[in-house]
Image: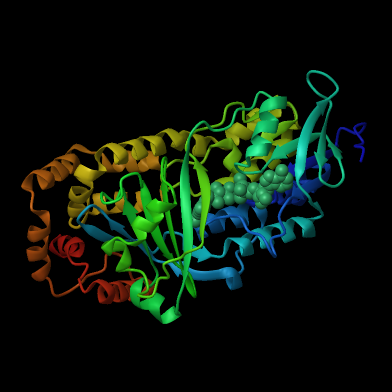
Length: 468
Ligand SMILES: Cc1cc2nc3c(=O)[nH]c(=O)nc-3n(C[C@H](O)[C@H](O)[C@H](O)COP(=O)(O)OP(=O)(O)OC[C@H]3O[C@@H](n4cnc5c(N)ncnc54)[C@H](O)[C@@H]3O)c2cc1C
């Protein structure tokens, strides 16, 4: 299939991968082409049929997902694909825990089935005019010298010639190797392995065990190697996942058998569970763009380590690459503009890495103390909420949370020792809850459900507010 290269306003863009990165790039290119007087043809090549296959994912969409969809792509999240709204995270430290709920003015977090999101986005790309090709790309060639004039993609079906190629194939090993062979691109050097399983159960059991709260476990000491684990409620099933650099499926089995995890799972978890394995990048790729190519989504490694929000990152990078093409074209200078558009994301990467490293170094010793302080200190409470939910930038969390008075409080809490006994005594003095700024009825309901589940009031934090 040949490209017409004579008209500089006409561009053919081939996108490898129809996940959130690839679909958002296609939608943005086609929706905004008119505004830039561009005539754009898009080929979106996706190897999976999302009616039958799916990309491994927990399916949690965090803020500002709705802004990204509406402002970048002109889309709203269809209600029918939302399985559950998430109102909080229960953060489990080595021996202590805290329920962290968001501000009423914060954006919403949703749990959904990932295949439904991929289906929705790829259908939208098709509706905008993208040529969807269900095939796997097997090789890429840059033609016409240096800098190249065209790109040719080979696939299990037809071959395609284009003015540029967008690599939206996630961490697909074959495609990463292909681009390493034919460009200066180098894949993210580090990543976390992740294992995931689903536990099907009655909705009533989910309400009883989890409500609308994600259980988050940081570095559980009983299973070394796990950096974090989570239990996420959906509609008639629960997703359990873990991540770590050196974990395997046995870590997931051991995680599931921990009492603090069992407490939030149905009583009848089968012994044999279907497990899936995946990866998150934790470092940036090298030369993520060049003449006539740019990576988006996971292939860039631009997702922040810790709470990365990979779907948001993929949507944002896909849309930013499209904007750079529309404004500046497809050579390396144009894609420098792409990197500029992603500066917020890129600047936060170092802070995300710092938080992850601090958590790895110190969590076993300080996490319980931080949780203890967060129960009476709004700054620490907000910092923990923002870190676990990914609500704010890590830069802002570090600037707010790492202040001398807070560090002193955490140190004092560590030194005081025997935190659980002290905390229990303080909680028992409280009989009334005052919800900080939280007039949202949903959040009240979550607190009530969570109290029922744990048998404990969320007292200490609010005690300080009442006293203040
Ligand atoms: C277990 C797990 C759980 C996760 N949970 C969450 C979560 O809850 N929330 C969140 O925000 N992020 C989550 N993430 C991260 C998130 O899934 C990714 O960051 C995001 O999907 C990246 O989007 P992408 O478009 O770059 O790549 P992908 O979503 O991986 O999409 C790549 C697409 O390219 C296609 N493809 C690959 N190679 C070829 C080829 N040669 N030819 C044609 N097509 C090809 C694939 O079939 C795929 O559809 C999770 C990741 C994992 C592994």
